[in-house]
Length: 99
View (cartoon, rainbow, N blue to C red):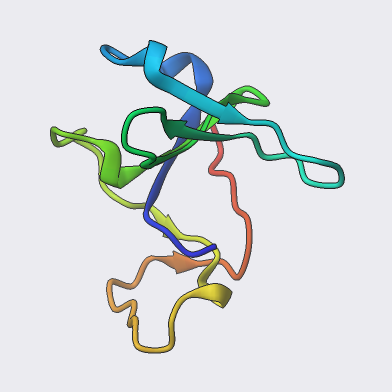
């Protein structure tokens, strides 16, 4: 699924408020990604603390995280009308940046 997300080491992610309202959905095999949602409004949060990494929906951030995109992933599923023009690397599916 095409989306704007942030990926990093699970130990680097701190949830400063609202952790008690996070709800998780455990996947049925063969799927492995656990999904996290806000229990109040249903907003998708991404995949938090799974397999030593996090995948966080960038739309959940209130403040500028101080980092910028390094690549585009899952571009095979982006809408035809969405143009990527920034020159960053593009990956048809998954990509995990080196630590």
